[in-house]
Length: 277
Image (tube, rainbow, N blue to C red; front, side, top):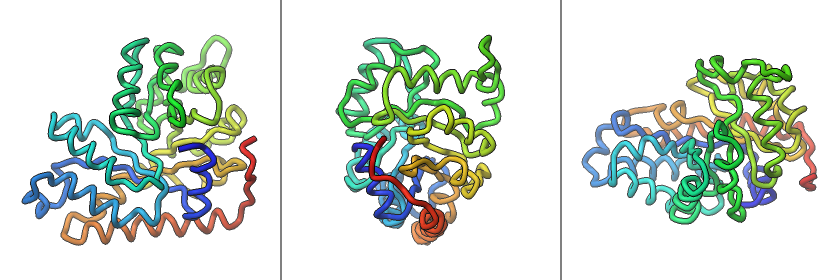
């Protein structure tokens, strides 16, 4: 999916919501365990209930990899079931040098046909470049994450007085453009979005941490939007595990709709450019 196609979907849906499919088999409703593939049935019903209110889905691959070959098959079926109109993110946090990254890229871009994959930047350009070689596919680079441990390294000042996460964002812009490179910026750091937009005014930001982790959608939107929205705000547990009963999909749909309505109200107050520049 191209940047312009993603932007048009946001305008059409009046939403920049991404639903995280962190489908932990120990947390799905018990009545689904009778199915041959209970996690896929869970995902299928969640997608059916939320697809009108979101523009993206983000399976965290750990919840599928941990289940071996059955989990991988479930992930493949899930990505095939997601409508083509929706942007898909393999939240895999890969990153290794040379041929290894090429194989990771093939796994998610060619074999599973994801639109994007999250990539760890610690090993530098040669670990990221192979992912950038695929047409109309995206790298979503970890910059400032929403977890407590982000304080350990990401905020540390370097010799040039930039915190490490700022250095990552500045250097990565030499590797590619806003047409196929996004950044992960956690919703729990809304005070940082003004500075982030100074560093990367045109790039899309994937923003996890809204919902269960307490991120503030209004503040994120106020400080983080750019001339083409530029945000994919992710919510996982607060949507997909809002109910553990037989009404789980209906409740998930209601939660997603509430986010969409809030986002529509925010978008109504903004003017956006059709130009990518």
